[in-house]
Amino acid sequence: MIDKLLNPIDMLPRLPLGAKVDDFIDWLLGQIGVLTRLIANFLEGIMEGITDLLLWFPPFILIVLIALIAWRLSNRNIAIFTFFGLVLIYNMNLWPGAMSTITMILIAVTISLCIGLPVGILSTRYTLFHRIVWPILDFMQTMPAFVYLIPAVFFFSLGVVAAMIATVVFSMPPVIRLTGLGIRQVPEDVVEASHAFGSTDWQLLTKVQLPLAMPTIMAGVNQCIMLALSMVVIAAMIGAGGLGGHVYGAIQRLNIGLGFESGLAVVILAIILDRITQSSRQTSEE
Image 1 (cartoon, rainbow, N blue to C red):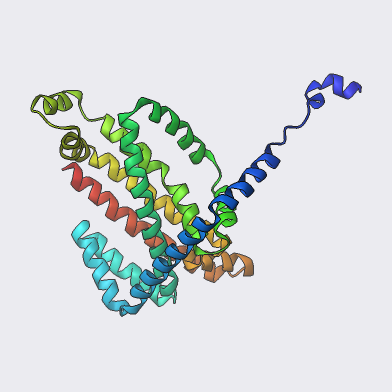
Image 2: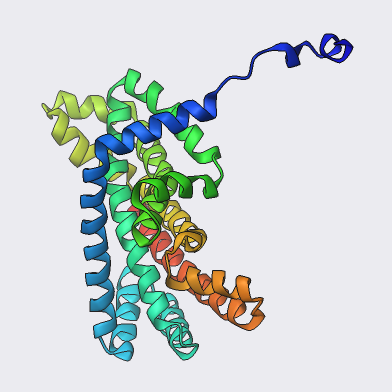
């Protein structure tokens, strides 16, 4: 009794937050269970199709094609690094895992952009929408990455689909934030001049605001890709496979050599994707 008087907080009844969340998730799963299964089947089909397509190509031909794309989007040095980096990944017998990882990143980033860009644009159009979305983004970015795996597994079960959904949620906030920031940074006099020349809202957005905001938007795309790559590795804990699966397997077996090779392959992919998107950002600035 004396202890409770010294610490009156102990006298408060415990709020059943966890139980309420569990009840809500159970109710929600019952309502959208069919939809989640359809999404899971659809994403899994796309994942298998793209991965099979990448593995169908002869590795050397695909490496040359990716290096040429890097040269076109970036510069010769990045193309050379891309070529030798991918050759090293193939030499370490990690090619299938690398193709699976690239596929997951492509799908997750595409979904993040399809959702994040419109949300970022809407946040610049409606003040109330902006005030609602921004605290949610703060919450999403401060939440530990591992926490996203729990609802993803609950709704989509273990496997690559749950990993992709968790990756999308984790990597989307930078796209929304930097899209909205880029549009807001467009000079007001430019916007007023566009209105003076009779531009519609759609013309103002597509021909003035988005082109001028493109460097900032590309920075958001760059961050989205990097976060997606990091989350794909973490999501190996729920059966994502790919290079993350090799890293997780090396941790479980205390295989230092495999862990180093798998980690090196992830770093190579991260550098390639980072340099290409950074070069695209610099090009848009010019």
